[in-house]
Image 1 (tube, helix red, strand yellow):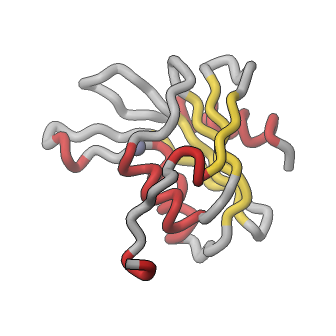
Image 2 (tube, rainbow, N blue to C red):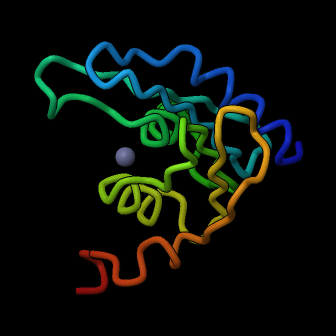
Amino acid sequence: MDIADLVQQAQSARGRARVPYSHYPVGAAVLTGSGKVYPGCNIESSAFSTTICAERAAIFNAIASGEHSFTALVIVSNDSAPPCGACRQVIYEQCGEIPIYVTGPDGQSQQEFSTSQLLPYPFDLGKS
Ligand code: ZN
């Protein structure tokens, strides 16, 4: 599994996004330590706080399937946006230090971040 394959899975997931309010579809795909890929897409709700981002959907999808280690995450959006603050916290807690690739709809010109770059001062109940 290379990053190009992961990008393709995220692009495919992006096509399944449910975004009637923002019209801002996002797809994600997370590669686990077992070598499996779990997709996620953003799903909006009219009660906005119950909306979920694509990357959290992918990570929770993997965890619900029994995965507990993560290798890489790809996020595809209109403008190669990095994860929101809530997702950065989830990536930190659930995935640890992994590469996070963000890219546009065509999957070209990926930008790579690490978890600690995106969340340099994480909240960690275990370390407080
Ligand atoms: Zn988010």
